[in-house]
Length: 235
Length: 200
Image (cartoon, each protein chain N blue to C red):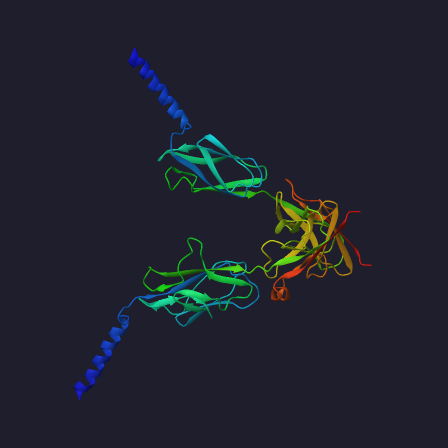
């Protein structure tokens, strides 16, 4: 009777001691991610996932690096592959684009010293630190030209893009690499072609003067292509 | 008699041989990459001698004098093109070897100037003017100067009305073209004017 009580008590004490030792002491690794240049474009967050966990990033204002760790650490030897939620990971390569924040593309950083692999095995390096860089998507800014019978026309999008040279008999043009979401533009003639006067109209702004904002509708339409440059003989 | 002629001949041959090497006597060409040069005027120098003029539009440069392995080189900017604020140099000071001689990077930054737009007669709210991606909302005032984002020297600017104020129509004039467009010079751009009047 007396012994039967002592035995369970001893077992309990041993269990408690073991638990306090940390359950065997296998090393675990936090997965830390730094997201760079995530812009506040008033849409969903960037969600990264690995090992069945999600990690959500919302843009800082002003834009700054955001560093976070996944909720659970992984054990030594466990594989990880940090990808935007919805990505399909195959053979350690990100096969297709998944859920990205709208109007920007976030991918593992490629510039030194941030170009650390986003996938691997815990314990390969002393710690798991991954960098993602977000780049705004540029939507084309383009239009048509009529009556351009001479060389010398140059167009610009303010001080942002340009000037570009438009040769004689050209009927269409595109300025620069494009315009990010929610950014203004204004196309103007910098130099007139020989003997002609060109004027700019169109765009998706209210003034029909070649200015506007790359808004939601414009991005869905694949950019602004309604700039019109009309050239007539100089009077 | 015979040997002294021979000796002089050898000395002459040696001197000719050395001078044919171009004074540097080495076999490594010192060079690198350069960016942002839109005008002539950049002069680089290596340790105070051996100047090299880098013409407008260059993306690479190479000194004509060769250097030898382990020669110390120190490339500095001797003079800048008129429209350049400064050039940042990387890997410009080292000892010459196969890896260091072509690692020099020179990144030049254009001067920037203010773009100040005069807005007259604005009484209504809602005027927005843009210079490309730079947007400024303008509040009513009889006459004011609106400071836009800085513009690069020799770069274009083009001020436009994006949104008109309530009850008024504003028109952009000035600049090189008379329509608020032009190319920035070596001083602040102050010639763009926006005049607002009641809509008819």
